Length: 96
Image 1: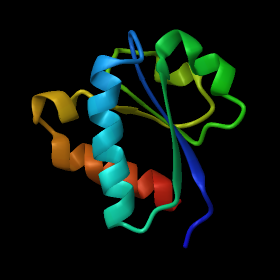
Image 2: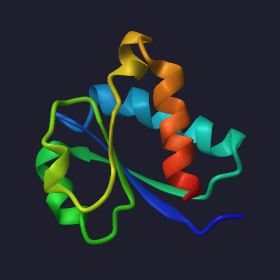
Image 3: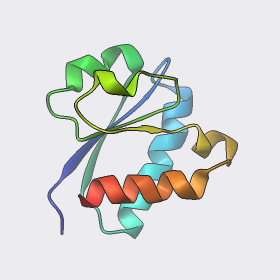
Image 4: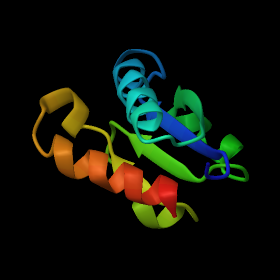
């Protein structure tokens, strides 16, 4: 099993859309035997977790260059458009 990775899942309020994405990411992790610690938060809280985050999945538009870890667009989990590509990217990042 891979080392545990910390995944931040953020939306504007830290409640609605991040809950949807959190559920999906936990399912992806379980199905792919990935050891993750999911932290659901508001975008404005992300800097507070930056020192221990391995991946950020967000439903808001962000400047990906401002973080030292990969940022994945979580909106495909809400719209269904590009969902398979987003899942593949999440698996790839968590296995690396």
